[in-house]
Image 1 (cartoon, rainbow, N blue to C red):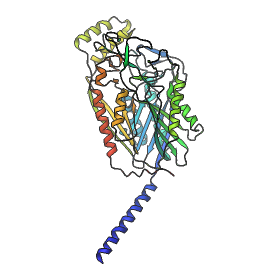
Image 2: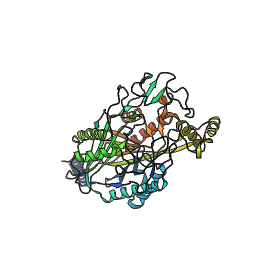
Image 3: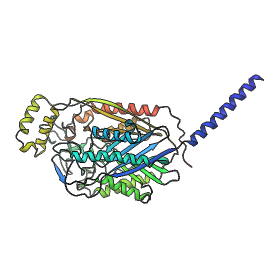
Length: 484
């Protein structure tokens, strides 16, 4: 009799615990807030990043924004900002995160700030012969922080879901294996006997084959109010950029405008915020060199295509009223491919002849880069990050990663789906895999835009996968029941 009574207590306890747990899950609330803040420069002209030689712009063709999203699962918050800029330094990202922490309390390790990589925005980091506009950079950092703070103030009960679309029309490998002795060379690039060339031309008889794969995924994370009204959408695509007259946000802004129209969110209140981040596009662009003639495209057609692919996937999304938010970051120290004393001496002889020290061509620019690298630290500390949203994984890479790198991370990630945001939380240049270093070419030529050690890519991949494993295996109470 005592045994039966004891079992009755156990069963009653289990039933009570189960119902209490379900009630607790139902009581949990995911909150989300978004805000797009204008970061268009007000003082013109400004230097424009993206070229080997300096350029300046005195006209705004379309506004630039920092598009911000804050998520709160009741246990912690995560913030993401996608910024219409070519590059931003780790110092700039860290300063913006510090300001956000002061106003919202969100820890810096749970904030992701990434550049879109538009080549028609003001320079905020030094690259090749273009020096940054420091006043604009300070303004940009402050605006990013204000944007995330405004998104935080807009927090409201929400539901969330994700999906993966495809667009193979606008992303192609731009590096080609060339016949021996025919690839472009650079006496100050730190390479010998280059076999790879970027953008070889459509009818170049010396090109053999593309050097790697590309990622055609169009990832999206959709956030709505509990009754289905759009709040924000974060997407990701791996083409480098399209091209636009400065000043412009390029196709990234076209995508945001079109997806907003497609999902019927143009009149949302608070305003709906669409965001398009750059994936692993270090060796990719919109040009298909297998064609005999250049296909017709511009920022408007590419933005339209990617938005349509996103919208098709958007219509398949299953939403959840609550998911756990897990974020983790790790520091990784990598060596720099420093020039030899002989290389520095030869470069200094070239730089000494430059009028006012300013390069006039590619060779002179790389000579200057050689001298500048010799004066910089021989290693850099990168900040890698992984975020888990329910069963979705997001990585943040402070480099220009190749398509093969992104595909490997996705293939080996314990979270499905996973997507990679490059140019995030700082910038440390192109990171070709070791086999690509062996082929040489522009993305391997030693400069501040490609300086890390040959083994940097596998080390970044290994650390990123460790982060994904860590956030995937973090013990959290995860009901993940779809919304009715």
